[in-house]
Length: 260
Image (cartoon, rainbow, N blue to C red):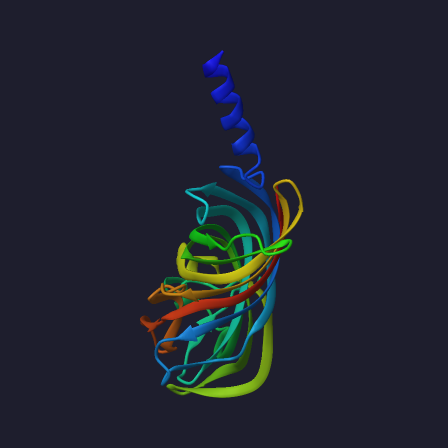
C-alpha cells in the first residue's frame, strides 16, 4: 500500500510537469534563401541568392528540463548562381546533354560558359543540441546548434553561354545563348555538410502540442562541386585540362512546424 501511494504521487508529479515528454515528433516546412560561396574569387563570383524551401519531420529527445537532442529528416531545395571570370568551355550532344571531357573530341558543339544557375535537391539529416527557456506565458524560447548532413539527389543547371566556332587554331566567340534544364548531377559532390545555428519559439496549444517558429542559418563548410570538373575544360583545344571548382552552399531558413 505504501509503495502504491508513493508511486501514485510520483506519477502525478511527473504528469503535472507541464506535460513534458521525453520524446516529441512533428512536421515542418521552411522558406529558404540559398546561395553559393566560391572559394577562388579570382575565378568565380557569387551571383546572388535563390528563393527555395524544404519540408520534413522533426524529432526531439529530451535530456533534461533545458536541453534536448533535435533531429529530423527533410528534403531541401538548394540553388545559387556562379559567375565565371575565367574561360570555361563544355560540350553538348545533339540531344542537349552535357558530355564528359573524354567524349568531346568527336563533337563540334562547344560553348563558352559565362554563368551558371544551380537547382539541387538534397535529403538532409539535421543533428542539433536544442536549449529551451522555461515557459513564459504560452511561449518557450530556444536556441540550437549542430550540423546538417545532406545527400545530393539531383542537380539541374541553366547556363548563360556563348556559341563558339573554329578559325584556324583559335576559338571565335559567337552569339549569346541560354541552355536550360541541363542535368549536372555527376559534377556535384554526393555529400554536403553545414553548420546549423538557429533560434525561435514554441507556442503551446495544449498539453505537449506546440507550434514552432524558428530562424536558422546553414553555413556550408564542404565543397558541393567536384574539385576537378567532369565536364568543364579550361580550353577547347585540350579536353584533358579540367576546370578546378570549389564552392560552398549556405542558406537562411524561416521554419514553421508543429510538435506533438
